[in-house]
Amino acid sequence: MREMDARSAGFEYLDGMTDGWPEGWTRQGRRERRMDAPTERMPPQEEAYDAYDPYDARREAAHQDYGPPPGYDARDDFGYEQPPPRARRGAARRAGGRRRWPRVLGALVALLLVVVVGGYFYLDSRLRREAVLEDYAGRPADTPGTNWLVVGSDSREGLSKEQRKEFATGNASGRRTDSMMLLHYGAGGTTLLSLPRDSYVPIPGRGSNKLNAAFAFGGPKLLVQTVEKATGVRVDHYAEIGFGGFVGVVDAVGGVDICVERPLKDPKAGLDLQAGCHTLSGGQALGFVRTRNFTNGDLERVQNQRKFFAALMDKATSPGVMFNPFRGVPLALNSTSNFTVDENDHLSDLARLMWAMRSVSGGGGITTTVPIAGFGSAPGVGSYVRWDTAKSSALFEALREDKPVPSSVVTK
Image 1 (spheres, one colour):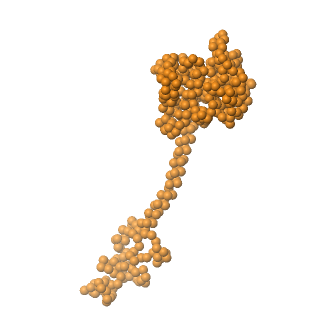
Image 2 (cartoon, one colour):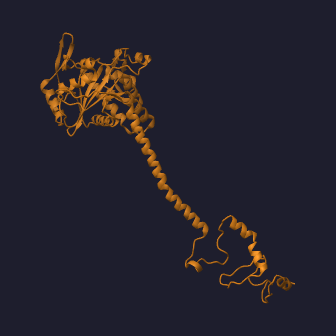
């Protein structure tokens, strides 16, 4: 019967087959082709069967590779063993992933650069600029090092009615100088010099008067000219901040740590501190730098101003603020919107100012006041402060020539 079936399919029955099927056939009805067998033309029935195999048709339609046929050895064609298809596809995926990482990293770096550069120009555009530093007849020539005139004004702009009452600032309009400091840094070191507002100096076109009167007469432009004429030091940069901006900056950094040796209470400045160390809020800090409730009045006041400004810059440039977006971003926004600078000053200049102040607070510089010879009074002027001519001249000469300040002219 098996012989008849095989012959009816167009094949000769071969003796010796254990299962009764022709050589190269199985019970499943599919022919296994030997790689080393000679090619023979198959009978029509076999060609039709192989050409119409539904399993092969589905596999080819899906373009899937299910590996070599049984008994196939890749070394027969290539001389070495090939990895299985799944391993090749996995290796390709891994190689593709490795190629994508540089592109992803490059995109992230580019995005970071866009954010940093864009943020810099945005903050720089928020600075208030004013034509302050202008040439005039007899202006001191450019000197080595860098000189800043840092001014704290009593402008109430930015303070609400409730804050003016709480901080005891009053409701005066306009702006007047409340503190003035000359910051110098260069090869000769860093020096933060207080200029008492009651200093009696010549004011161009106005005769002699208190230093803060120059600001009242002609604003920051006349103040810079007065400082340059009195000291012989050329001012390179100008920065001014009012009461409201000062409070905002201090609150943005989370307060500033200050230690006082004795209780400080001044209702006129809204200040009430016990002896010891405190973290001053913006309102408390404003009272601390404004109070004149001391036996030597303005002279101790300027010491507190230098002490506080150095501590503020140290806090503002600390990692806890610089790398904390909840501190750094409000600080940047408050600083840039409340500082008035010269029309040629930029955010990068303010950054260098902050680092120079940080150097002073860390003991890397000198903080001092213009040497004082005594006090005096004049009609229409009132009480004023007189500079020590010899000592102050030696101090200003060191700043002009960018040399270390002599210890003999340094006062606390």
